[in-house]
Image 1: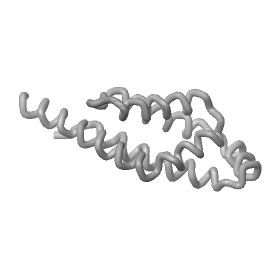
Image 2 (image 1 turned 180 degrees about the vertical axis):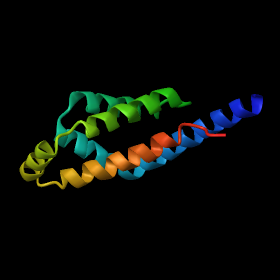
Image 3 (image 1 turned 90 degrees about the vertical axis):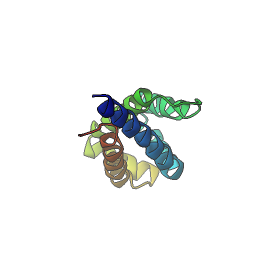
Image 4 (image 1 turned 135 degrees about the vertical axis):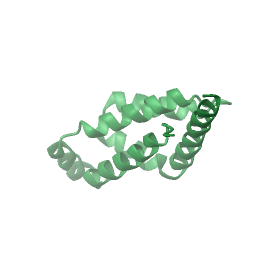
Length: 115
């Protein structure tokens, strides 16, 4: 039992580190996508995520919750709305949404230890 708890904590820390690395590389693109979608909940979740990494010890629960919220915002977008935004902003919004959604799903899967 103790070993499982240690493994779970270690797995969540690894997930936090992976999320931080991902945001360093792709955070600007995710920010641009959320800005284009113009969903205040998604933007707030992004700010929460960014703020969590400003802490000395980032809280895995806060990071996981923010990732889930951002993914939910992306999942809730209608294809016709994404196409319209793509035309207005001249950004590949549908592709960005799929790519970021898949990466967020990958990151979220890392937050759960399977024995």
